[in-house]
Image (cartoon, rainbow, N blue to C red):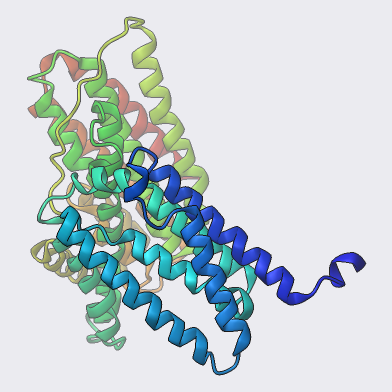
Amino acid sequence: MEILSQIPKELTEFLLVVLFSLLIGLEQRRLHIDLAFESLFGTDRTIVLISILGFMLYTVMPVSMGLFVGGGVIISALLGVYYYNKIKLQNKWGFTSIVIALIAYCLTPLVDRQPMWLVMLVVVTTLIVVEIKESLFNFTKKFDRNEFTLLAKFIIIAGIILPLLPHDILSKTINISPYQIWVSIVAVTGISYFSYLLRKFVFPNSGIILSAILGGLYSSTATTIILARKSKEESNDLKIVSGIFGATGMMYVRILILAWIFNQEVALVLLPYFLIFVVVTAAIIFALNIKNKKTVNDPVVENTTKNPLEFKTALIFGLLFGFFAIVTNLVVTNYGNIGVNILSFIVGVTDIDPYILNLFQHVSGNLQVGTIANATIIATASNSVIKMIYTLILGNKSIKRKIIFGFSALIIVSIASTFFL
């Protein structure tokens, strides 16, 4: 350390500038290794020399940076002349090499005035962005014309509308605020949007089971209906049934995430029970597949996930949220915890998210944590009942016995767990 402390600061900075610029230049050399030598610009030597020029001009006038700025103007002008001739003579429009040369020129003030982690972050990011050119190009091929519209909608929902909404409750009867309603919409659509992105960009060619798991994050009921109908087209019964229970298992994960966002006390109470439910669904899938040791192909499933960010869907969700707030408040006032449990079972046949998020935010009255957790489990059990009914009605006859066995086991475990709350 004593020896290092004796090294002049200027020497250290010079070596760092040369090292970083050399790395960038070598990467450019590797990227253009197949091009003719005479057509290359901005590789190892050029990048290093530009950075050294920047170091010299900055060091002479480090405070006012007059020479450095003047040199930058001259370098930019020369690069502009080069770019013009490149377009005119070679009909090539690539601008990356010029930007990299300007980055190399700016390394010296960055090294001198900014923390080392930021300098290294700039260099590493530059290397990575330039290196993944083909990967980025292939990635953009997956985009259609609606992707940025979807992103814009999510920004509008989460970043523009939400902060503008008031926090005051609507009335004594509707004991919720517009902000509470909309933050619930943001949470649910955010998880659905994340599932949509995974399905489209990360696992575009996923089979039935993986598609069902990702679809379960969006909506386990919708995924169950799709797979039940698909069972009449596919002969792969085990994959269909496994996918249905995989989607149901993800329902518990989605609800647990929402509980953690809105009410961590409830989430901690639900955690052991929901872990048991997930283990039970995994055991059902294992039990169904262990009897059949044949290797069965898992066909690719087309992405049928609907747009998770439609304003119409958000409006319906908000209306349901307000409706369940009123109904739950009346039930709690007149019938107490027993009424909440009965209501939870009834609500389970519909979209349970607005109702459960109502409970998580305590907007329906002074409910105890145990009561909310118990009502949530009852609602998920009821939802499993309706998914079993959907599958029996819409699915192929060959999967009905497996569906009854699996959902019956899950419903029994769910109902039994309510006695421990």
